[in-house]
Image (cartoon, rainbow, N blue to C red):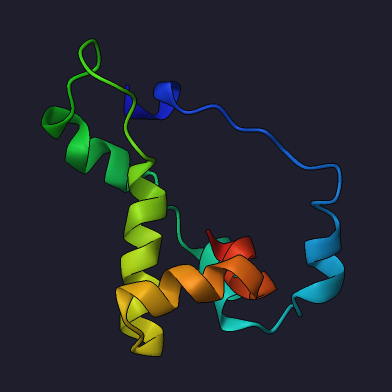
Amino acid sequence: MIRHQQTLILSPYAALYDIVVPKDNILRQINELVDFTFIYEELEAKYCLDNGRNAIDPIRMFKYLLLKAIFELSDADIVERSKYDMSFKYFL
C-alpha cells in the first residue's frame, strides 16, 4: 500500500499545536472531521509499490490542493506559507 511507504517521524514538540492552533481554526476542524484515507484507496492503482522511489504522501498533496482552493493562493505561496503558518503545518 502507498501508506506503508511513508515513515512518520513525530516531533517531541507536536503538543505545541494544541497551544498555537485554536480549536475553532477551520483547518483544525477539517483535519478532525474529515478522514482523508479514502485518497489511498482512490490512488492505489496509480502507484507502483515495488519500482522506483517512494511516493510523496498523496494525502499531503491533496491537502496542498485543498489549501490552494480555500485560501486562493498560488503554488509558491502555499509552499512558502506552509513554512511558517502553524495552522498550515498542523493541517499538512
